[in-house]
Length: 311
Image 1 (cartoon, helix red, strand yellow):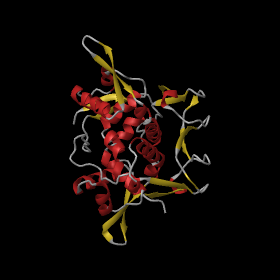
Image 2 (tube, rainbow, N blue to C red):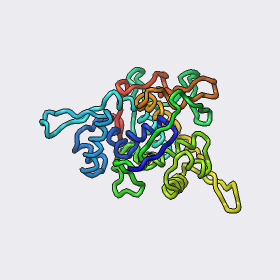
Image 3 (cartoon, rainbow, N blue to C red):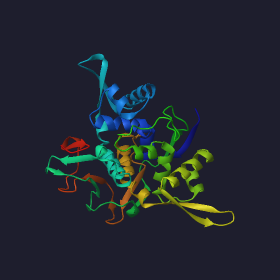
C-alpha cells in the first residue's frame, strides 16, 4: 500500500481512525441508543458487509466494545468506550451545524435537555480561558511539542467515496455534514483552510495526493457552499478558495475533533502537534461545549435528548 508523508496533525490522525462517514454514523447511532447490528442496519442505510467491516474497525480502534445480550452471543450489543464517549461534544457541534445549514424536518430535529439546570439547551463553544464564544477567525496556530511528520496511507480499506451508491439513511441526525466531511481528503482540505491556505498549490504541498483527487474535492466544496472562489491571476486564470460563512461555521466541529485527537491519537507520546491561541484573550485555546443557559460544560450523562416531537 502506497504511503505519503504529511505534517503531524491530530485532526488527520483522528480522521484516519473515525473520519469515514460510516464510522461517524455508527458512533452517532450508539450515542442515540441504537446499539444492535439490526438497529444500525436500519438506521444508517448501510449494507451488511460495510456495517460488519466498520464495526470490526471501530472495535480495533477501541471506540466500541461488543458484548452478549439477553438474546445470546448471536445477537450482541455494542457499547461506547471512554474513548468514543469523549466524542460527545464533537457530536453536539455536528448537530448544531446541521440544524443551522440544513434544517431538518420536525421528525429529525434533536431536542436537548440539560439535567443540571432543567432547561432545553443549545450547545455553544466557548474559550476555556475568557469564556467568550470562539470564532475560527480569532485563532492563531503555532507548532506544538509533537510537531513532526506522519506517515499516512494514501488509500485505506475504509474507502469512502463522494460518489458512493450507499448514502446515509434519511433520518440520520447529521446526514449532510457526514456527506461533506465523511471523506477524509475533503475534511483535510477544510481543516487546512482554517490555517489560511487558499491556493491549490498550497493545499497540494500540505496534502500531496494526486492532483485529480484534490481538484475533485475542491470543486465539491465549492458546490456545497463551503468555499467561494476568487480569481487572483488572469493569465492563466487561477482561483483562490476562501471559506464562506458556512465553511467557518464548521470550525467548532473541527476544533472538538482536534482536541479529541490530541488526547486519544498520539502514537508517539510527544504531545500535541499544534497549539492554538485565542487571539481575543491571548491565551492558549481550549474549547468547551457548554449549556447556553447555565454555562456548565456538557457531558453525555448530563443531557437527555429526543429526536422528533419533544415528549
